[in-house]
Length: 119
Image (cartoon, rainbow, N blue to C red; front, side, top):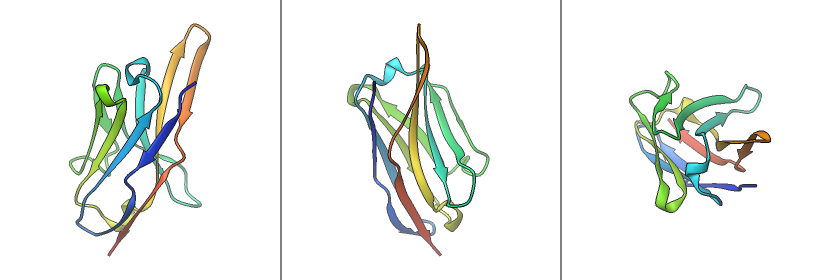
């Protein structure tokens, strides 16, 4: 079992920056991948960025060049640096982790943190 707790959301003006954090209760090296998702009420959840256990990262086209996913192994934490924010980035952002064991795959989710970008 693992727990994920996000922080860092808030209200920011368009063009501003925020840094989201996701603290894990287990070593993040145990996860095959960690991701940031976002969801707007009434819309499908969207994958924003993902980082694999090997450190490779990929991003949604809508955030490429503006957002950066990173991790700090010593702190068991995942981060999302968001720059040049736009009103359309407004959403609840959640971190997710995938754990593979001999028993199969387990997906873990945080509770989410609200990001609101004003125009």
